[in-house]
Length: 547
Image (cartoon, rainbow, N blue to C red; front, side, top):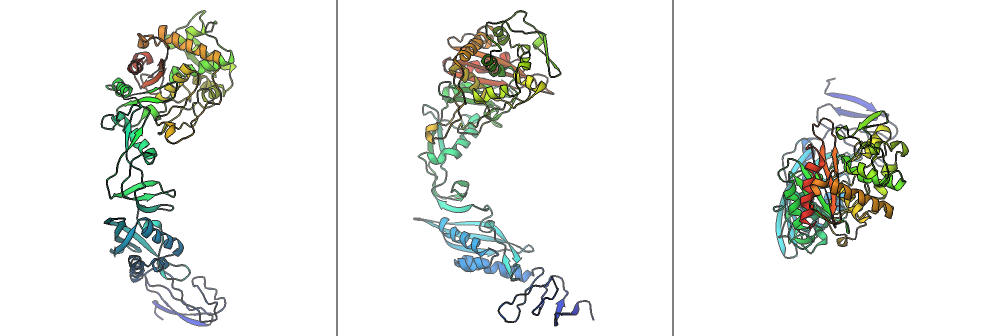
């Protein structure tokens, strides 16, 4: 007997097995257990068993299955088209939704040359929405598989068959309910455009996506992909011109321009200004203007500006007092690491106020042995709101002060270790000191959507507030921040910082300060001392706001 054709007896019934590549295998199976796991028997009604085709699909089967499905879809026979898939229920629902939600009146399909069991095809849909009539063409593809229960070639149903951009839970819609574009304005109604303020481009785009549908704008008629809640994920085609809606922000155009000018010319720098009495963000600027928004989303060690938070903790615990003697030696060791001050200075017989004003590292390291590992974490979170889930209206990094031990805990006291901040969070720290209360920063007014803002679990004690303001004022008038703050009077306070970074010749320069009802913070990476490099940036911003 030749190899291409063999006779086999299965359960008493003879069957011919054709051994040609690409041709399906057929088997006749009598009632009872044949022992052949490569065949499928279906009877159950007392009639002769059906023949179940298995094996690879032929080119003809692929072509026929695709044509039957596409033909039924084009004819508007949803039931028939769905029956030519391996999930008729899901396919029927999706096909019906395509007609109703996408407002498709007619469909024309055209299959292209199959690529194995994959069949690319073109779709031209006629859209009828009110008086609007238009056509929409796109390409998609389907996969033909053999149904496991019947052996018939069917379409492997996936939402992407309808459109390649679809996946589970997504639908195609034609309507005017998408997210309108926005016309961002400042607190006084002055326009804020990406062209005028490139540094705000990502912020304007982001708040537009979040709040465009809460403005008086119109998305215009569009074909879009919507998520399970109906929110726009992608606009596939704009059918009529949208009308931008006015979106008011908390920004101040005057302060914003000053912030942009203050960081311009620096290879890398960022600054944020906040209104302490309300938490409103007045300005956000980065250099370069285009790129990562370090001002709001950066994550950097804040250096000695973190001593503002650490000092609040020490004052709260009675471990320090502005006018009382406090050690500031050349060196202080903790956790096996020897810490020192800039140029290894020391203050003999000095007070805590003097140590803060000169940014003495060892004055804080000497207190490490009296602290629990989570003390700084709790102070930062519970009083200053750092690390809570801020809902500013745009994407932000809200600070991180992890619980650490040993050397890392001691390092955190002076803004190194695992502590991570950005100009937004450090401006908020200065704002909290100025007002005595943490008010979560916002760039889109809460009144627009009624969202719940983060709240610090406890208020700063009145005595701590008074002492902390006196420390920051001393630093701004006669300490490391004095040069940058010169000429600013009234309710002022400041703190410098220089954060060491491994592999970097110069430290990151930090500066945070307030003047009246404006607080600001800036960082200028790899530039050196905070007062000399970040200080002038903050000063320009405070001056622009009338500080």
